[in-house]
Image (cartoon, rainbow, N blue to C red; front, side, top):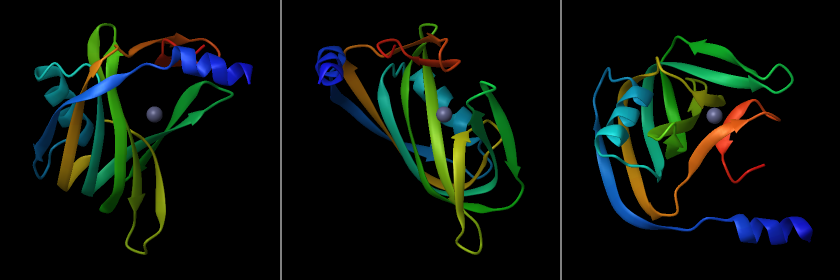
Length: 152
Ligand code: ZN
C-alpha cells in the first residue's frame, strides 16, 4: 500500500505533442538514426516504436551482479518483431533507449538492449513526442544504470 501511494505521488504526467514517421533507409544504423533525429528535433520526452528487418544486429544483456552489459552480435538478417523504447534527458540532452525483439529464419525470437551497429534492412518507425513533466536520467548506484531520477 505504501509503495502504491509513493508511486502515485511520484508519477509524472505528459501529453502527446507531435507524432513523426521516420524515414529509415537501407544501411542506416537503427539506434544512431533515431538518436540523431530526436536530437535534431530536440525531442526531450517521447515514445518510440518500430518494426522491420535488420541486416545484422548488436544487442546487449545487462549482467545484474556485475553491473555491466554483455554484448551480443547477430551477424545474419533478422526480423524486428518489435522495437520499443523512449526518449528522455541524460546530461541535458535527448537520450534514446531502445529494446528489440528479433526473429531468425526459423521464427525463433530473442532480443535485448539495442546497441549501435544494428543495420537497417527496412524499417517503419514512429516517434511520439510528449510534452509535460521532464524525464531526466541520473546514475542509480543500486543498479549501476542511468535511470529516471524519480526512481530511487
Ligand atoms: Zn536497455
